[in-house]
Length: 90
Image (cartoon, rainbow, N blue to C red):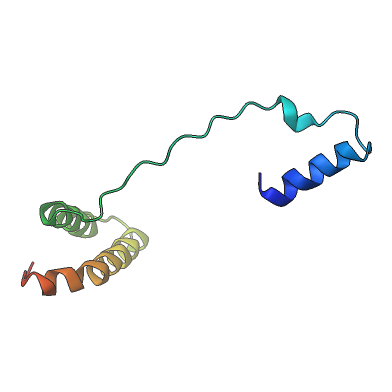
């Protein structure tokens, strides 16, 4: 619930437009966000790409192959600068 919704619901209750705010009975627990690693290890990226290439080769339909190829292109574009920086050639 954003701040505007909170203010408007409290305002409705304050001005006696509503007797009871139904949101007061909701019990919500927010999870703490998990900390993600800033760097993905190179062997993980290699495994990820190898799996994607395998799925591309074993794709049964043109739709599966096209989507795998798209995903491979995105991952390679994202990780190509890191590979160039590390002088790594897959």
